[in-house]
Image (tube, rainbow, N blue to C red; front, side):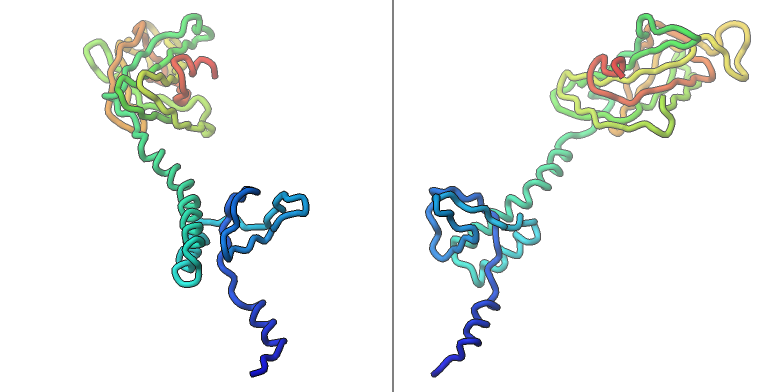
Length: 251
């Protein structure tokens, strides 16, 4: 039977090509039977550049499905390896986030103390430090919830707010065992606000503070050193948590 040469050429050039998989080639790597490399080799023996597409998870998956019917065993193995690589990058990031849990109050030790030399113009700065006291890594972020407490445990007016309203960028601060995060609180200890007494302390002195880390929840209660009034009904300008025992002072 005579075959029309034009039909034979059309059949060769329109036949489906096997899916391409990006494989790092070495000049000394033995060539697999039946595998055509588009780049080939230059006369000097160096491999030419290959215009291969980087496989995505979807394309690699299609390569595996195609391999069961049309690809040989070696090509099927190559496609399987490419699929694993394509999926591992995104999966690795997701696993890393799942393995670091938020810090609960019970996992932290806290202190709230004045920053020496910070008093001036009617304001003062205290620094809040939290330390991971467990054997597991956890994280804190953003602003903690704070409640001022009086000498007998009475809840005092407390109104913390971001130091830069509408412009706070919360960061995820990962705390390994023994590591610190810190935030600063700026307030007035003696400038009275609207509705506060003109004579004497603007508010009763706060001796302790209750802290709820975010987003883990739970509470820690620590002493305020030294005890202080927080005027304007407990108004405090807070910075977001940053890494380090004194990280909040370097902002």
